[in-house]
Image (cartoon, rainbow, N blue to C red; front, side):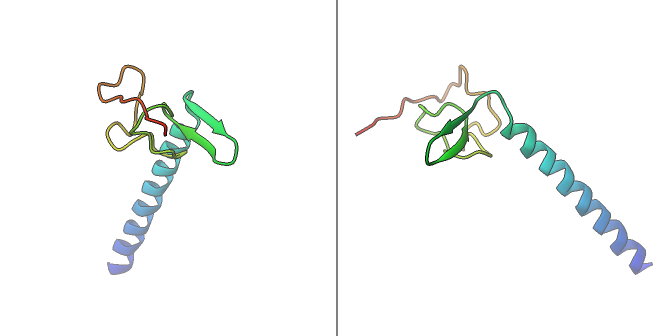
Length: 79
């Protein structure tokens, strides 16, 4: 019984990892992906103050997007 339960848990964890990996891949190949020399690929509006500068997540406020017409957009101040 315990072996069957552990097998079931293992299969469930494996399925959850596959789904998560597919979701990350879908997000990272989105249309708002930008390549910056020396940094790599980033997603989201890179002019926004809240952009995470990451290929996996746009920002903490609106991580799944879209960035277009986002209520929280704030232009980044460059020094």
